[in-house]
Structure formats: C-alpha cells, structure tokens
Length: 401
Ligand SMILES: *[C@@H]1O[C@H](CO)[C@@H](O)[C@H](O)[C@H]1NC(C)=O
Ligand SMILES: *[C@@H]1O[C@H](CO)[C@@H](O)[C@H](O)[C@H]1NC(C)=O
Image (cartoon, rainbow, N blue to C red; front, side, top):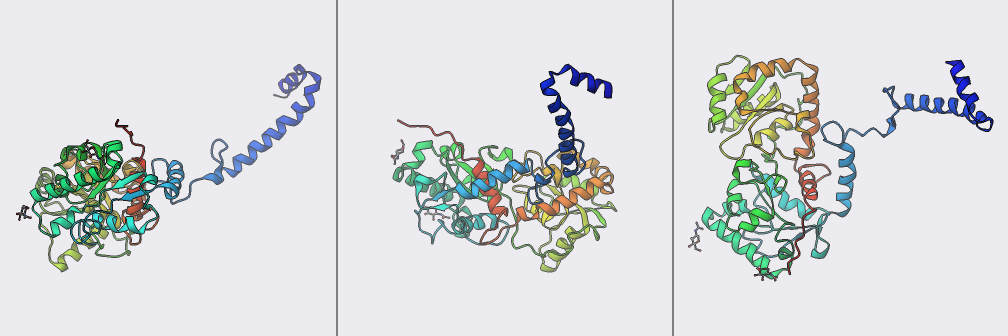
C-alpha cells in the first residue's frame, strides 16, 4: 500500500507532489465527514436532506411530489364557469354528507381555495360546475339529466371561446354518482376530450385512465372519530360485511362465511346501532376486505384507511384514487378477484410479519389524504384531487383555424 502510494507520487511531476500529499488526506477526511453525517449508510449521501415524514414512505417519488406540490400551490388556477342558476343544479353542492359527499366537498372547496380565478386567461383548467348529485336530489330522470348536461355544455361552447381552443381538453367536471357519468354521454366530446373526475373509475365503465381522474368515494362524516387506530386491539384477521351483489362478493361469502378467523358476513347493516357494531369491526381487524360491488365500490376503502385497517383490494380494473401519486402497495394489499380461495392463506402468512406492521403504519399515514375538510387543508382529499388535476394540465392545445 505505502510503496505504491510513494510510487504514484514519484511518478507525478515534482510540482504536483505537495498537492497530492495534501489532497489525498483532505479528500479522505471529507469522505469520512459525509459518511457519518449520512447516518452510516454504505456510501456518503446528504443525510440531512432526507425527506420529512409528510412526503415519505407512501409516495412514489416524495421529492418530486414535494417540489411539484409547492409549485401547484403557487401557480395552479381554475376558472369556474359562472353560468347556470345556483338554485337548480349549478355551482353549489347538494350536501356534504353521505356516500356521494366527495362531489359536494369539491364544489364547496374549490371556491374556498386559492386555486379559483376570475380571469379565464390565467386559468390552467376550466371547471364545468354542474352537479349530477344535486339533479338526483331534485328527482330528475336519468334521461333528462343527459339532456340538461348536453344543453348546458353546448351553451358554454357557443358563449365562450375556451372550449373550442382545445376541444375541451383543459375542461373538467366532477361527479361521484355513476349516473352522473352516464349523464355526460349525450356529448361525445365531453367523454372523449374533457377530464372526468369520477368515483366510478372502473376501466369497464368508460373510464379512461391517464385522461380521467379517480375521485375517492368517502362516506362523510366518519361515524367514529380518531381513537384506536393502533394495532393493539386488532384480534380479527380480516373483516367484510355487505351485500352479495357481485361475482367476487358471492365467492367471498360462499368460501369464507363460516370461517373462524375471517369475519365474513353476508348482510347489510342499516340500523343505527348495527352501524356502530360494523364500524367497530374496522378497529378490531387487521385487514378489511374491499371487494368490487355492483357499481362504485370505494367507500369501504376510505373507511378502512380511516380506521387504520389495512385495505385488501379485490377489484380488477379499478383505478385506485391518487394511484399516480401514492404507492398503494405500501399501504394496502392488492389482490386479484381470483385470489378469493387463497385469501386466508395469504393474509395469515402476512399478519405476523414485520411487513404487516409497516403496512399498518403506512395505512395510518395515508389517512389525511382521504379526509375532506371545509375549508380544505394541505394534503387532504381536495388537495390530492387538485394535484391529480395539476398533473393533467399539460394538455395538447389544438389550434383550430
Ligand atoms: C323530463 O323532461 C320532460 C320535458 O322537459 C318533462 O316533461 C318531464 O317531466 C321530465 N321528467 C323528469 C322526471 O324530470
Ligand atoms: C365553437 O365551435 C362550435 C362548433 O364549430 C360553434 O358552433 C361555436 O359557435 C364555437 N364557439 C365560439 C365561441 O365561437
């Protein structure tokens, strides 16, 4: 070692020898300093730049999200078309409760946020504020809903120049009820070009991944508040109760209804007392099964996350909310619908591992992203939807001559 060190230095021109003798130890000292600052990892890294908890773990790329989210807060602007009578189906939400509350919160939150602009020329995106949930409340038939949506959007197209600039590619609307999605089908360009923010994000329901945005379906308010989200009282391996209204649910009940460790119940709980029993199960279980239902199916997913129960997704072709921001594999178990027969083996194998503890920890971290607030707060469901829309803003602007 030493002779070769000398040999190297002697092979250098005399002028460079002092630099070499000084330079090597100094470089070595800097290396050591970085080594200890980076928390003894294998090679020096800038340890003090580690991402904070807010962005860590459950994001695909925390650092990219952090920078882009900050830019969104500074720059993102949405223009809301002012037309339509607010007393009918336009502008304001029907309500902020129930299982279609996500739609109501979005309508309310966008106005309470800094993203709203009155200047269409500074807008990145245009919001078509027609609430299909409110139409449902006024008992409009689904056929008439289609007509109302079509006429409204056609009136915006002829009154304003914005739609024609991009053929609607920078326009979006929000609907949580799957009938609302049907109501947009009278206008082919609306389906093809605009961004549909919907709770029914099943690929086989006309949802177009990468163009459309999956809105999380969240039953509001949550029946039980924050206690017991830890692991301590979770003695049930896995829980599901509900209607047997899809193939996978029928299989689930058929195979596991009488099992001693999986708590699978074929019934729906409507009475107030029973709802509490039902919610309590979310606190007592390690895993909560979220099988595809007849239509939209994600209320149970948001419930599981809220109650700290690791969701088990059993729904092929479902675009999970915030899928391109959050890494669902970090806080849920995504199985195939065909996995029902192997369910117990899979869950039992996982339930006593370090991996499960990590999954549960991350489920708790995901909670705040599935919570609506009024006014909205950073990183909540509203901001995550806005971030998804922010990612859609680079649309092709067709110039129409
Ligand atoms: C649907 O529209 C027609 C024509 O405007 C109206 O006569 C009818 O009452 C509407 N039906 C419902 C259920 O809204
Ligand atoms: C946009 O294009 C449609 C179809 O070509 C046309 O009917 C409408 O008047 C145009 N809108 C504006 C504001 O020029």
